[in-house]
Length: 165
Image: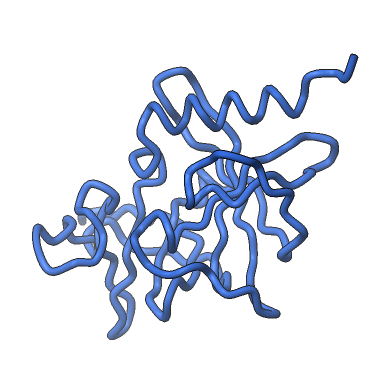
Protein backbone atom coordinates (compact mmCIF):
# COMPACT_ATOMS: atom_id res chain seq x y z
CA UNK A 1 0.00 0.00 0.00
CA UNK A 2 1.44 3.36 -1.04
CA UNK A 3 1.35 6.09 1.57
CA UNK A 4 0.41 9.37 -0.09
CA UNK A 5 1.95 12.36 1.73
CA UNK A 6 -0.28 15.26 2.65
CA UNK A 7 0.98 18.80 2.88
CA UNK A 8 -0.77 21.60 4.76
CA UNK A 9 -1.37 24.94 3.08
CA UNK A 10 -2.89 28.23 4.16
CA UNK A 11 -5.34 29.37 1.48
CA UNK A 12 -6.11 32.97 0.60
CA UNK A 13 -7.59 35.07 -2.20
CA UNK A 14 -5.93 37.58 -4.51
CA UNK A 15 -8.10 39.15 -7.19
CA UNK A 16 -10.74 36.37 -6.97
CA UNK A 17 -8.15 33.59 -7.45
CA UNK A 18 -7.30 30.97 -4.81
CA UNK A 19 -3.67 30.84 -3.68
CA UNK A 20 -1.87 28.88 -0.99
CA UNK A 21 1.42 28.91 0.86
CA UNK A 22 2.89 26.03 2.86
CA UNK A 23 1.88 26.31 6.53
CA UNK A 24 5.55 25.82 7.45
CA UNK A 25 6.23 29.31 5.99
CA UNK A 26 3.44 31.07 7.91
CA UNK A 27 4.16 32.71 11.26
CA UNK A 28 0.72 34.20 11.80
CA UNK A 29 -2.21 35.95 10.14
CA UNK A 30 -3.10 39.48 11.21
CA UNK A 31 -6.09 41.67 10.59
CA UNK A 32 -5.18 44.60 8.37
CA UNK A 33 -3.43 47.30 10.37
CA UNK A 34 -1.98 50.68 9.54
CA UNK A 35 1.15 50.43 7.42
CA UNK A 36 3.87 53.07 7.74
CA UNK A 37 4.94 54.07 4.23
CA UNK A 38 8.63 54.11 3.39
CA UNK A 39 10.11 56.57 0.90
CA UNK A 40 11.82 55.37 -2.28
CA UNK A 41 10.93 51.70 -2.15
CA UNK A 42 9.57 49.39 -4.83
CA UNK A 43 5.87 49.95 -5.65
CA UNK A 44 4.87 46.54 -4.27
CA UNK A 45 6.53 47.44 -0.94
CA UNK A 46 3.70 48.95 1.10
CA UNK A 47 5.79 49.86 4.16
CA UNK A 48 6.25 48.57 7.70
CA UNK A 49 3.99 47.34 10.46
CA UNK A 50 4.91 47.09 14.11
CA UNK A 51 4.73 43.47 15.18
CA UNK A 52 5.40 43.25 18.91
CA UNK A 53 8.12 45.90 18.73
CA UNK A 54 9.72 44.74 15.46
CA UNK A 55 9.34 46.46 12.11
CA UNK A 56 8.02 43.97 9.56
CA UNK A 57 8.04 44.97 5.87
CA UNK A 58 4.69 44.46 4.13
CA UNK A 59 4.39 43.76 0.43
CA UNK A 60 1.36 43.77 -1.82
CA UNK A 61 1.38 40.41 -3.63
CA UNK A 62 -1.11 41.74 -6.17
CA UNK A 63 1.33 44.48 -7.23
CA UNK A 64 4.24 42.03 -7.18
CA UNK A 65 2.27 39.83 -9.59
CA UNK A 66 1.35 42.69 -11.93
CA UNK A 67 -2.25 43.12 -10.75
CA UNK A 68 -3.78 46.31 -9.33
CA UNK A 69 -3.41 47.35 -5.66
CA UNK A 70 -5.08 45.24 -3.00
CA UNK A 71 -8.23 47.14 -2.02
CA UNK A 72 -8.50 47.48 1.75
CA UNK A 73 -11.75 45.87 2.92
CA UNK A 74 -13.03 44.16 6.07
CA UNK A 75 -11.47 40.81 5.05
CA UNK A 76 -8.06 42.22 4.04
CA UNK A 77 -5.36 40.44 6.03
CA UNK A 78 -1.60 40.39 6.41
CA UNK A 79 0.04 36.97 6.27
CA UNK A 80 3.32 37.05 8.20
CA UNK A 81 5.79 34.74 6.45
CA UNK A 82 9.35 33.46 6.87
CA UNK A 83 11.11 33.98 3.55
CA UNK A 84 14.46 32.32 2.85
CA UNK A 85 17.02 34.23 0.83
CA UNK A 86 20.68 33.71 0.09
CA UNK A 87 21.58 35.63 3.25
CA UNK A 88 19.23 33.77 5.58
CA UNK A 89 15.61 34.30 6.46
CA UNK A 90 13.58 37.47 6.76
CA UNK A 91 10.09 38.04 8.15
CA UNK A 92 7.71 39.60 5.62
CA UNK A 93 4.05 40.53 5.72
CA UNK A 94 2.02 39.86 2.57
CA UNK A 95 -1.33 41.53 1.89
CA UNK A 96 -4.17 39.21 0.92
CA UNK A 97 -7.76 40.06 -0.06
CA UNK A 98 -8.96 37.42 2.40
CA UNK A 99 -7.46 34.47 4.26
CA UNK A 100 -9.53 31.29 4.27
CA UNK A 101 -8.35 28.11 5.95
CA UNK A 102 -5.59 25.58 6.36
CA UNK A 103 -6.16 22.66 4.02
CA UNK A 104 -4.36 19.42 3.28
CA UNK A 105 -3.52 18.53 -0.29
CA UNK A 106 -2.07 15.13 -1.11
CA UNK A 107 1.29 15.35 -2.84
CA UNK A 108 -0.17 13.42 -5.79
CA UNK A 109 -2.88 16.10 -6.15
CA UNK A 110 -0.29 18.80 -6.91
CA UNK A 111 0.66 19.31 -10.54
CA UNK A 112 3.73 21.22 -11.70
CA UNK A 113 3.24 24.88 -12.62
CA UNK A 114 1.85 25.35 -16.13
CA UNK A 115 4.44 26.70 -18.53
CA UNK A 116 2.05 29.10 -20.26
CA UNK A 117 -1.25 30.90 -19.85
CA UNK A 118 -0.83 32.02 -16.25
CA UNK A 119 -0.74 35.62 -15.07
CA UNK A 120 2.12 34.68 -12.78
CA UNK A 121 5.60 33.76 -13.80
CA UNK A 122 5.93 29.98 -13.53
CA UNK A 123 8.98 30.49 -11.31
CA UNK A 124 6.71 31.88 -8.55
CA UNK A 125 4.49 28.81 -8.59
CA UNK A 126 5.45 25.68 -6.65
CA UNK A 127 2.53 23.81 -8.17
CA UNK A 128 -1.21 23.76 -8.71
CA UNK A 129 -3.25 21.84 -6.18
CA UNK A 130 -6.61 20.27 -6.93
CA UNK A 131 -9.32 20.29 -4.30
CA UNK A 132 -12.83 19.24 -5.30
CA UNK A 133 -13.32 21.14 -8.59
CA UNK A 134 -11.06 24.02 -7.61
CA UNK A 135 -7.49 24.70 -8.61
CA UNK A 136 -5.35 26.36 -5.97
CA UNK A 137 -2.11 28.02 -7.01
CA UNK A 138 0.60 27.06 -4.51
CA UNK A 139 3.19 29.82 -4.29
CA UNK A 140 6.90 29.30 -3.87
CA UNK A 141 7.25 32.15 -1.39
CA UNK A 142 11.07 31.98 -1.29
CA UNK A 143 11.35 32.43 -5.06
CA UNK A 144 8.88 35.30 -5.21
CA UNK A 145 11.53 37.43 -3.58
CA UNK A 146 14.81 37.38 -5.42
CA UNK A 147 17.97 37.74 -3.37
CA UNK A 148 18.19 41.52 -4.01
CA UNK A 149 14.70 42.00 -2.64
CA UNK A 150 15.39 39.83 0.41
CA UNK A 151 18.54 41.90 1.05
CA UNK A 152 16.45 45.10 0.72
CA UNK A 153 13.83 43.71 3.15
CA UNK A 154 16.55 42.68 5.61
CA UNK A 155 17.99 46.21 5.43
CA UNK A 156 14.54 47.69 6.15
CA UNK A 157 14.08 45.27 9.03
CA UNK A 158 17.46 46.13 10.58
CA UNK A 159 16.86 49.89 10.21
CA UNK A 160 13.67 49.51 12.19
CA UNK A 161 15.27 47.50 14.99
CA UNK A 162 18.28 49.81 15.44
CA UNK A 163 18.03 51.81 18.66
CA UNK A 164 17.53 55.54 18.17
CA UNK A 165 20.51 57.68 19.20
